Length: 116
Image 1 (cartoon, rainbow, N blue to C red):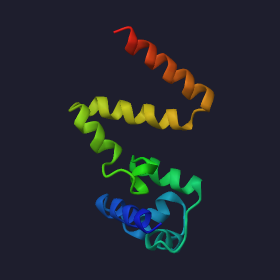
Image 2 (cartoon, rainbow, N blue to C red):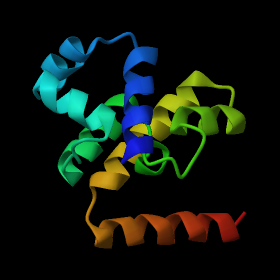
Image 3 (cartoon, rainbow, N blue to C red):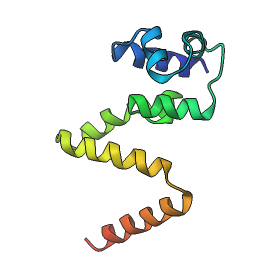
């Protein structure tokens, strides 16, 4: 969890939050946040998802499996801020959807691709 903690700390600082401010914003204790950042405590899956949603990054990014945040990856695809905002919103909704709905969305997207 060392890489996770470092990524979390980097995101917090990059977004201008102190530990106290971020903890208050996310309704967690400052000491828990400090332990997550130091790799001394592992956050629950719910807390991990909360951090990812809050900072608009993927869990892969937080765990160090990806070197670019979701926003960075989207900027490479589109220079339109509106497109990026729409995709981020779509992605958040998709992540919260049931597996059945996710499969339906993928089927629809694949069918529109093959029809191009």
